[in-house]
Image (cartoon, rainbow, N blue to C red; front, side, top):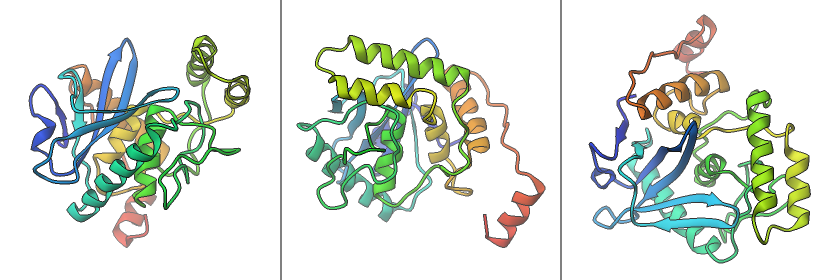
Length: 245
Protein backbone atom coordinates (compact mmCIF):
# COMPACT_ATOMS: atom_id res chain seq x y z
CA UNK A 1 0.00 0.00 0.00
CA UNK A 2 3.01 2.30 -0.35
CA UNK A 3 1.58 3.64 -3.61
CA UNK A 4 -1.40 5.26 -1.88
CA UNK A 5 -0.82 8.84 -0.77
CA UNK A 6 -2.90 11.42 1.08
CA UNK A 7 -3.36 14.58 -0.99
CA UNK A 8 -2.62 16.61 2.15
CA UNK A 9 0.81 14.97 2.47
CA UNK A 10 1.85 14.50 -1.15
CA UNK A 11 0.26 16.42 -4.00
CA UNK A 12 -0.93 14.47 -7.04
CA UNK A 13 1.01 17.01 -9.14
CA UNK A 14 4.15 15.03 -8.31
CA UNK A 15 2.85 12.12 -10.38
CA UNK A 16 3.44 11.47 -14.09
CA UNK A 17 0.22 11.04 -16.04
CA UNK A 18 -2.57 9.24 -14.16
CA UNK A 19 -3.72 8.59 -10.59
CA UNK A 20 -6.80 6.87 -9.21
CA UNK A 21 -8.35 9.24 -6.67
CA UNK A 22 -10.24 7.93 -3.64
CA UNK A 23 -11.93 9.70 -0.77
CA UNK A 24 -14.57 9.35 1.94
CA UNK A 25 -16.74 12.47 1.56
CA UNK A 26 -19.48 11.17 3.87
CA UNK A 27 -20.00 8.64 6.64
CA UNK A 28 -19.09 5.21 5.26
CA UNK A 29 -19.35 6.65 1.74
CA UNK A 30 -16.43 6.48 -0.68
CA UNK A 31 -15.96 8.20 -4.03
CA UNK A 32 -13.46 7.48 -6.80
CA UNK A 33 -12.26 9.15 -9.96
CA UNK A 34 -9.18 9.65 -12.13
CA UNK A 35 -6.66 12.47 -12.05
CA UNK A 36 -4.81 12.82 -15.34
CA UNK A 37 -2.65 15.01 -17.53
CA UNK A 38 -1.47 14.19 -21.04
CA UNK A 39 1.56 16.50 -20.83
CA UNK A 40 3.83 15.92 -17.83
CA UNK A 41 4.20 19.69 -17.38
CA UNK A 42 0.46 20.32 -17.63
CA UNK A 43 -2.11 20.70 -14.89
CA UNK A 44 -3.85 17.66 -13.48
CA UNK A 45 -7.57 17.32 -14.17
CA UNK A 46 -9.89 15.35 -11.88
CA UNK A 47 -12.36 13.33 -13.97
CA UNK A 48 -15.17 11.64 -12.06
CA UNK A 49 -18.81 10.63 -12.34
CA UNK A 50 -20.38 12.64 -9.52
CA UNK A 51 -23.97 11.59 -10.16
CA UNK A 52 -26.56 10.96 -12.88
CA UNK A 53 -25.63 12.97 -15.99
CA UNK A 54 -22.93 14.69 -13.93
CA UNK A 55 -19.51 13.82 -15.34
CA UNK A 56 -17.06 16.43 -14.07
CA UNK A 57 -13.57 17.50 -15.11
CA UNK A 58 -12.12 19.72 -12.41
CA UNK A 59 -8.69 21.19 -11.73
CA UNK A 60 -8.89 20.80 -7.96
CA UNK A 61 -8.76 17.76 -5.67
CA UNK A 62 -9.73 18.14 -2.03
CA UNK A 63 -6.96 17.68 0.52
CA UNK A 64 -9.25 15.14 2.21
CA UNK A 65 -8.81 12.77 -0.73
CA UNK A 66 -6.02 10.29 -1.40
CA UNK A 67 -4.60 9.02 -4.65
CA UNK A 68 -3.07 5.85 -6.01
CA UNK A 69 0.00 5.73 -8.23
CA UNK A 70 -1.03 2.92 -10.60
CA UNK A 71 1.39 0.09 -11.23
CA UNK A 72 1.35 0.66 -15.00
CA UNK A 73 4.24 1.38 -17.41
CA UNK A 74 4.75 5.06 -18.25
CA UNK A 75 3.84 4.68 -21.94
CA UNK A 76 0.54 3.03 -21.06
CA UNK A 77 -0.21 5.76 -18.52
CA UNK A 78 0.31 8.40 -21.21
CA UNK A 79 -2.12 6.50 -23.45
CA UNK A 80 -4.61 6.25 -20.57
CA UNK A 81 -4.37 10.01 -19.94
CA UNK A 82 -5.18 10.69 -23.61
CA UNK A 83 -8.20 8.40 -23.36
CA UNK A 84 -9.37 10.27 -20.24
CA UNK A 85 -9.21 13.53 -22.20
CA UNK A 86 -11.15 12.01 -25.10
CA UNK A 87 -13.83 10.52 -22.81
CA UNK A 88 -14.24 13.85 -21.02
CA UNK A 89 -14.58 15.72 -24.30
CA UNK A 90 -17.04 13.20 -25.77
CA UNK A 91 -19.34 12.92 -22.75
CA UNK A 92 -19.48 16.29 -20.99
CA UNK A 93 -22.45 17.32 -23.16
CA UNK A 94 -24.21 14.00 -23.78
CA UNK A 95 -23.80 12.86 -20.21
CA UNK A 96 -23.38 9.43 -18.64
CA UNK A 97 -26.32 7.95 -16.68
CA UNK A 98 -25.84 6.66 -13.14
CA UNK A 99 -26.71 3.01 -12.66
CA UNK A 100 -25.19 -0.41 -11.99
CA UNK A 101 -24.34 -1.40 -15.59
CA UNK A 102 -21.23 -3.26 -16.69
CA UNK A 103 -17.93 -1.39 -17.16
CA UNK A 104 -17.03 -3.65 -20.11
CA UNK A 105 -17.31 -1.99 -23.55
CA UNK A 106 -18.91 1.07 -22.01
CA UNK A 107 -17.20 3.54 -24.37
CA UNK A 108 -17.02 3.53 -28.16
CA UNK A 109 -13.53 2.65 -29.36
CA UNK A 110 -13.44 5.51 -31.88
CA UNK A 111 -15.61 8.32 -30.50
CA UNK A 112 -15.16 7.47 -26.78
CA UNK A 113 -18.86 8.23 -26.25
CA UNK A 114 -20.75 6.22 -23.64
CA UNK A 115 -22.56 3.32 -25.31
CA UNK A 116 -26.05 3.17 -23.85
CA UNK A 117 -27.50 -0.31 -24.26
CA UNK A 118 -29.21 -3.27 -22.56
CA UNK A 119 -26.26 -3.97 -20.24
CA UNK A 120 -24.58 -0.54 -20.31
CA UNK A 121 -27.42 1.38 -18.68
CA UNK A 122 -25.02 3.60 -16.78
CA UNK A 123 -22.09 3.56 -14.39
CA UNK A 124 -21.22 4.34 -10.78
CA UNK A 125 -18.17 6.37 -9.80
CA UNK A 126 -16.22 3.13 -9.28
CA UNK A 127 -17.33 1.34 -12.44
CA UNK A 128 -16.59 4.54 -14.38
CA UNK A 129 -12.93 4.20 -13.35
CA UNK A 130 -12.99 0.52 -14.34
CA UNK A 131 -14.57 1.40 -17.68
CA UNK A 132 -11.93 4.03 -18.50
CA UNK A 133 -9.11 1.59 -17.73
CA UNK A 134 -10.98 -1.01 -19.82
CA UNK A 135 -10.99 1.33 -22.80
CA UNK A 136 -7.19 1.49 -22.50
CA UNK A 137 -7.06 -2.32 -22.31
CA UNK A 138 -5.92 -2.17 -18.71
CA UNK A 139 -8.37 -4.41 -16.88
CA UNK A 140 -8.22 -3.87 -13.12
CA UNK A 141 -10.86 -6.37 -11.91
CA UNK A 142 -11.60 -9.95 -12.85
CA UNK A 143 -15.33 -9.71 -13.37
CA UNK A 144 -15.95 -13.45 -13.62
CA UNK A 145 -16.47 -14.71 -10.09
CA UNK A 146 -17.18 -11.27 -8.61
CA UNK A 147 -19.46 -11.68 -5.61
CA UNK A 148 -23.19 -11.25 -6.01
CA UNK A 149 -24.61 -8.30 -4.07
CA UNK A 150 -25.01 -8.95 -0.35
CA UNK A 151 -27.62 -7.33 1.88
CA UNK A 152 -25.46 -4.23 2.38
CA UNK A 153 -24.95 -3.86 -1.38
CA UNK A 154 -28.67 -4.20 -2.01
CA UNK A 155 -29.48 -1.56 0.60
CA UNK A 156 -27.00 0.76 -1.10
CA UNK A 157 -28.47 0.05 -4.52
CA UNK A 158 -31.96 0.74 -3.19
CA UNK A 159 -30.77 4.05 -1.71
CA UNK A 160 -29.33 5.02 -5.11
CA UNK A 161 -32.65 4.14 -6.76
CA UNK A 162 -34.57 6.31 -4.30
CA UNK A 163 -32.13 9.19 -4.84
CA UNK A 164 -32.58 8.89 -8.61
CA UNK A 165 -36.35 9.05 -8.14
CA UNK A 166 -35.90 12.34 -6.29
CA UNK A 167 -33.54 13.76 -8.91
CA UNK A 168 -35.24 16.10 -11.40
CA UNK A 169 -35.02 15.10 -15.03
CA UNK A 170 -34.36 11.37 -14.59
CA UNK A 171 -36.55 9.56 -17.12
CA UNK A 172 -39.07 6.89 -16.06
CA UNK A 173 -37.33 4.51 -18.46
CA UNK A 174 -34.05 4.93 -16.61
CA UNK A 175 -35.72 4.50 -13.23
CA UNK A 176 -37.24 1.23 -14.46
CA UNK A 177 -33.88 0.03 -15.76
CA UNK A 178 -32.16 0.75 -12.44
CA UNK A 179 -35.01 -0.88 -10.53
CA UNK A 180 -34.41 -4.10 -12.47
CA UNK A 181 -30.71 -3.97 -11.60
CA UNK A 182 -31.19 -3.68 -7.83
CA UNK A 183 -30.15 -6.99 -6.28
CA UNK A 184 -29.16 -8.38 -9.68
CA UNK A 185 -26.05 -6.35 -10.52
CA UNK A 186 -22.70 -6.71 -8.80
CA UNK A 187 -21.25 -3.79 -6.89
CA UNK A 188 -17.75 -2.50 -7.51
CA UNK A 189 -16.70 -0.42 -4.52
CA UNK A 190 -14.42 2.61 -4.94
CA UNK A 191 -11.91 1.30 -2.42
CA UNK A 192 -11.68 -2.04 -4.25
CA UNK A 193 -10.93 -0.28 -7.52
CA UNK A 194 -8.27 1.89 -5.87
CA UNK A 195 -6.67 -1.15 -4.25
CA UNK A 196 -6.60 -3.03 -7.55
CA UNK A 197 -4.81 -0.10 -9.21
CA UNK A 198 -2.12 -0.07 -6.52
CA UNK A 199 -0.68 -3.52 -7.17
CA UNK A 200 1.36 -4.82 -10.09
CA UNK A 201 0.80 -8.57 -9.91
CA UNK A 202 -2.46 -10.48 -9.94
CA UNK A 203 -4.23 -8.01 -12.20
CA UNK A 204 -7.03 -8.26 -13.12
CA UNK A 205 -7.76 -8.71 -9.43
CA UNK A 206 -10.12 -11.37 -8.15
CA UNK A 207 -12.94 -10.32 -5.85
CA UNK A 208 -11.45 -11.86 -2.68
CA UNK A 209 -8.21 -9.89 -3.14
CA UNK A 210 -9.99 -6.71 -4.18
CA UNK A 211 -12.10 -6.92 -1.02
CA UNK A 212 -9.03 -7.30 1.20
CA UNK A 213 -7.19 -4.50 -0.59
CA UNK A 214 -10.28 -2.31 -0.34
CA UNK A 215 -10.56 -2.85 3.41
CA UNK A 216 -6.98 -1.65 3.82
CA UNK A 217 -7.64 1.38 1.59
CA UNK A 218 -10.53 2.37 3.87
CA UNK A 219 -8.28 2.03 6.91
CA UNK A 220 -5.69 4.27 5.27
CA UNK A 221 -8.36 6.87 4.45
CA UNK A 222 -9.31 6.92 8.13
CA UNK A 223 -5.72 7.27 9.32
CA UNK A 224 -5.51 3.69 10.53
CA UNK A 225 -2.85 1.09 9.82
CA UNK A 226 -3.56 -1.56 7.17
CA UNK A 227 -3.66 -5.10 8.47
CA UNK A 228 -2.25 -6.74 5.35
CA UNK A 229 -5.24 -9.01 4.89
CA UNK A 230 -4.14 -10.04 1.40
CA UNK A 231 -3.14 -13.68 1.39
CA UNK A 232 -2.55 -15.95 -1.60
CA UNK A 233 -3.64 -19.56 -1.54
CA UNK A 234 -1.06 -22.29 -2.19
CA UNK A 235 -2.62 -22.83 -5.63
CA UNK A 236 -2.45 -19.11 -6.46
CA UNK A 237 1.20 -18.94 -5.36
CA UNK A 238 1.98 -21.85 -7.68
CA UNK A 239 0.22 -20.10 -10.56
CA UNK A 240 2.23 -16.96 -9.81
CA UNK A 241 5.53 -18.88 -9.98
CA UNK A 242 4.47 -20.46 -13.28
CA UNK A 243 3.35 -17.10 -14.63
CA UNK A 244 -0.19 -18.41 -15.18
CA UNK A 245 -2.12 -16.29 -12.66
